[in-house]
Amino acid sequence: MGRGVFYGWFVVAAAFAVTCMGFGSAYSFSAFIGALQSDFGASRGSVALVFSLAGFLYFSLGIVSGPLADRFGSRPLAVVGMVLTGVGLGAAGYARTLTEVYVAYGLGVGGGVGCAYVPAVGAVQRWFVRRRGFASGLATAGIGVGTLVMPPLAAVIIAALGWRDAYIILGVLTVVIGAGMALLIENDPQRRGLAPDGDPLQTAGRATQASGLSIGEAVRSGRFIGLYAACLVCSFGVFVPFVHLVPFALDHGIAPATAALLMGAIGIGSTVGRFGLGGVADRLGRQQSLLVMFIGMALALMIWAVAAQAWSLALFALVFGVFYGGWVAVLPAVVMDFFGGRNVSGLIGILYTSVAFGTLIGPSAAGFIFDRSHSYTVAILVSVVANGVAAAIMVGMLRVSRTKESTR
Image (cartoon, rainbow, N blue to C red; front, side, top):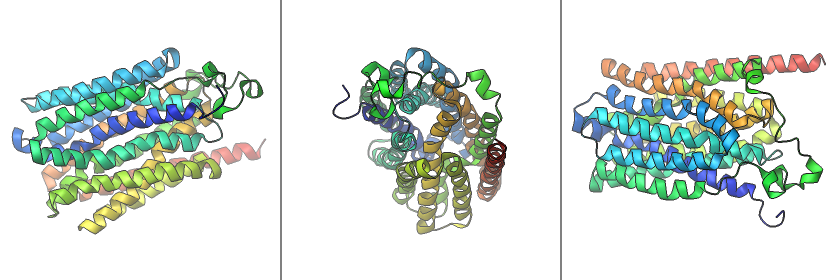
């Protein structure tokens, strides 16, 4: 079993498909905003709340799906999650009121991605040690590819068939590709007679996967509290572009087809960040790299604050995507580094509740701010500050770590 392609890469491929279809479908929401506003006569803030509710669910449900994956395995949760996501998308296509969209999209996409994401990404962490950052980046690169492909695809389908058929088609694709690939996920390399990275089991020992802190020990630690605070603060701004970049571009006279491609530009940057920065973090230090991601996202959002033309918005989208992708890729690996593999999926799920609150508040608040002021300037500047505060928290964590190391 140890010969040929290391099975860990099949687990990575499955997680890639799960993140691609799940988040690709979720982040295509920006292509639907105009149609939903028009059909339901709704404000931008109330339509943005659809995404915020879904985002809150798919990040907060990791606190349930993560521990369940640690106990029962990641595969069944990932499969069920992808099916639920597809059903939610299809049900949104049949919605007759905005409230029904809230229920179908929020519970279906939010609940489905929440069920699948943390188990899939958590499983990858157990299969690698030396190349954990790269493997995690490759698995979560599905988010970048999904963001690159799905919003423009949705825009094309909406233009040709309408937003209802677009949701139904995306739902079918999610079930076929996402759930089908999720069947490849396995939790533990030991079941295949291997240790992480494909090493022979007898040379690596059997304690690797079981080692690590309990959930209670981890969440009470300063490291976890610092990570939680940094992710909570930054998330108020991180997901604003995923909802409002396309409407922002349309407000500035950019053609709908070009505006939809801006989400694809975030996807390109995100994919580059996950592939490139995940591997760089393995060499330079994953905690230090996480600090760089927060600083990079803050600087990118500053570009958005002054951008008004297609080229400058594309520049923002690419740069933001690189550092956003790096953040998503490095974060699960940092959790594994800090707390071990014993409860890695559960701890990632708990950590992502911080992102859930930011996702719930940030995009919808930006929409309501726009409804009152007819401008995104305040929302963008708040997003810049939020990522700056997250970077400051990481600087404090690094200083504490260095102090502890110097006193040993």
